[in-house]
Amino acid sequence: MTIASRQGIDWPGIRRYWDLLYVLAARHLKVRYRGSFLGIYWSLLNPLIMTGLYTAIFGSVFASYYDNSVLNYVLAAFTGLVVLNFYAAATTQSVIMVVWSGALLNKIRLPVSVFPLSMVAANVFQFSVGVFPLLALVTLLISHNPLNVILLAFPILSLILVCLGVAFFVSALYVFFRDLHYFYEVVVFVLGLSTPIFYPAAIVPDNIKRILVFNPLYPILESLRQIVLSGEMPEFYLVAHALLNGLLIATIGWLFFRSWRSEFMDLL
Image 1: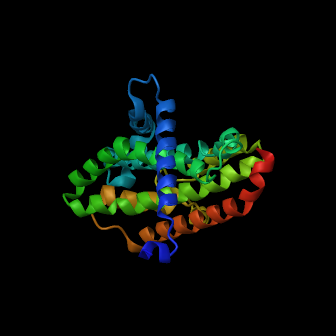
Image 2 (image 1 turned 45 degrees about the vertical axis):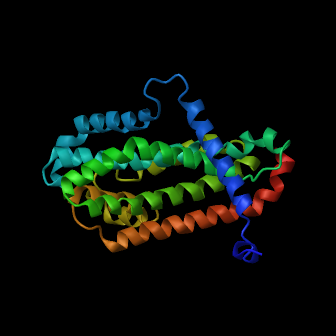
Image 3 (image 1 turned 135 degrees about the vertical axis):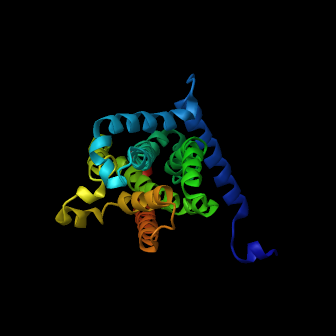
């Protein structure tokens, strides 16, 4: 008996799960960008265009909050849009994944959790080859320190964990409430406005700023901006706050998904 067998690790099951995750994530990307000229690089073009628009409207007004540098405002707006776009895409597209897989699940016994996870994985891959190289290059040019590029992994990991937890929660909830898709779009819109993306956090009144603490994207965005813009080490409490938020939301989302999973098949 091998060590893996004695410890109860189902390596063949893990391999099958991984293979299924890979196939589904690749399928999502192929379907999404079939016939597209730019393909996954549309994920980079969107924040670049929106950054240009925000800079044209707000750049001269808010530059004073970024060392009187319009370029710093451009980078701040870009990092904010990158975070929001990734969250919006990964979670909004995950809402329907369990219901979308209903026909397949009624024919073949498959792990239900792989479907929302595959959508998040597809967006992670898209981010890795589209947005991240530019983000890493900007960080290296400003900080002149390769360590800062490595530190980008912490806020990005926090963002992925937040998206994963929300994806599990909303995809499970959609099985019971089919209007959730429309309501969740409003939630994402409100979350985007309440996150200091195109405006600096410094202009937010103190009584409102206390509420920002409960916005899971806020510590992620602030720690990412510190790494990219300042060229210095990020504040530990921000990175820790972002990671703890990510772990907590991922855990809660998974627990809800797992507790409701037994009722899915009756409604699919």
